[in-house]
Length: 318
Length: 285
Image (cartoon, rainbow over all chains, first blue to last red; front, side, top):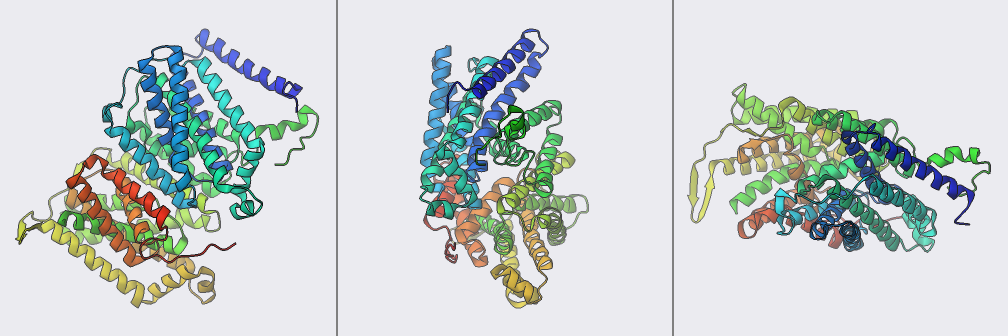
């Protein structure tokens, strides 16, 4: 497979076009600062949802602790960024945050990923709570009051770069042999194991990659909104991310992206009615599960629907 | 110490609901903690607006929580009987959020203070100080648990419940009405949660729409610790978690209380996932 194939060029061109269009809209003030926040939320939610989808949708490991990883990224990023107030400091903080989240993901993943289904969900939930309580009690994180005055370096360019990178990297990971191993674990763990797949290794791998990108999203978040506190990354945040993944379809990256955009818009329009928003969220979860448990996209990707327009039929095994 | 036991018996009451529902349909009923919250509100309404005493309020709250539990089961879980466990689990989380925010919408997010129903007199038994509220809490909890043991082991419905939890298909073949039995389980579990809600309201003196999350999770931990699906296990687990929490806040830092309980959960899940009194079930291909 060539890196510079026609298809990849098309994808790159589409991405650049999207970037340019939004940048022009921002410059011409059609997207005003208020909607810019929505845009940032969309990007951060896309990263979070896609990374959780890798763990829950593709590898089939139900995790309720994604906000915990996000908070690690946010705090590490913010602390480094406050020490080194420059773009280099921002990037260093971001990568340090993402790596720290991935490390914690590995440390927590090795023991807990032996658990299955609901037990794993509860264990990851507990883990996120532990992370939150630790941040609540640490000196450097300023306890419950949180960190304030984090320098802002996140702008549309960085958001776009990291969102695109997250989506493309996770997409490529799923298409790789490692990713296929992860999907086989979702389908049938025992069968996968008997085919010689090291299930623990692949589960931890997916978990760590998911944590890495969640950490990235957290660092972007802290740098965009100036302010973080442990309360922001509680159980509800994990549920928020889960709603996006479930609505979009577990096992569909494009589904997650679409759902992230939809829900961020919904959040913006219902900003002043938090309770109604949460009622809608919850009702949405129950209704989707009863009437369309696959979510919007099921396990399909948007490219599956358009393959015929690109001429050749796609021969990849789904 | 006495604090720990009274807190623990409340956890045990909630944990019983978890463990019964899990035993029968293998579902962690996340909405259970919120049934408990609503039970507390119903108790609050019954005592404040209708001026009922402690026991009538407890019974009103138990009956309405039982009804609520059955409604939740019928609306949200029954259509999903055949689907994957993750799907049901997500529905349960959704249901829990729905209850929380619908309550918040109607009663407001602010914390309300519970009326004083029981006197606060302290009694001294040697070195132990115990007050009237704690005595009521512990005895109500024990009475309810004895009642539950009686229902499960001596009545026909209890027998049906046990049969369904062992083998659902076989139970159905023997003429047991599965749906009714499951609804009945939800009713009993929710009634206990409602009772726990009233007891907590009295104990802590305050209620709010999000009060169900933490005790709900801790009661679940208690159920796991005792061996999920096992009724005496849930009682022991509840008391153990309550004691542990009280000891951590007494001797250590109360801020770490929740973290310690969750760390404990992860340790149990890793070392002995079947719990203290649980049966070991071997995985079959």
